Length: 220
Image (cartoon, rainbow, N blue to C red):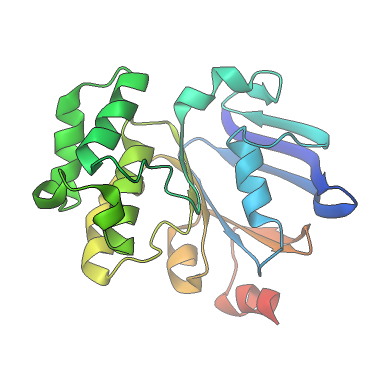
């Protein structure tokens, strides 16, 4: 089964077209890396796949379900990491993750396993608003992977992380089917099976063999 199938998908905000004519397929186990400058449509694409936005035209299927009609059936199978961490700032990391564990019927032992994996056990009982940006990101990654979803949608997963912290989360987000937005060209290409370049909401390229020069041309 293909994990993602898009045919002529588009989305507008009023009169501004954010995304148009996107057609692609991602097989199970593959990573799609998405590149493009600010406003190119990357976040809009990710939010459509996450069932957070409705496409205004075209056909979108995720994990075999048509969006938005069957979005309810796939939300629990998606791990989403966006610009916002989706954490309650007045709760601790442990409280946040236990809240999400209850939503997904996941044992609390999984929470402890993840806190240990990302080096957050010593600060797990401090409120999120006391954390550095990197600590918030590590906790948000734990939230996204908590329920072992078959599809990860990742918007700059290494943002705010030093090399040591990035190495800790790499095993958590490095397996399975992924769509990953990245401004780190070298890292994104190294992780990708397929590379999507967006410019002005349109597909500039969709290839399996892409060079750094191809990607950097998107930002010129």
